[in-house]
View: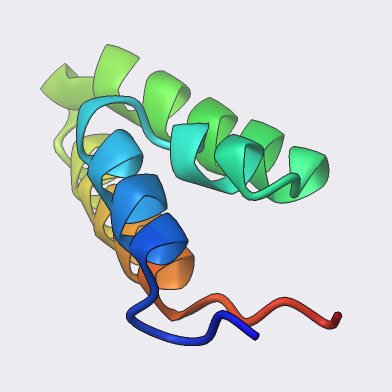
Length: 74
């Protein structure tokens, strides 16, 4: 059983560093992947409004941590 800190989670977390949501996609969590990607993409696109950029940065960090701590239900 792979748990927190397993090799798969480390790879997923590293994927999220480059593209938010990619790590969740690697883990097979489609909905979470889409949500993290959309929040970050829209927030980073609206960076000039300051607040969306801050929210996107927080969501990006959250996506990385979420992928690293994910435990499969199997």
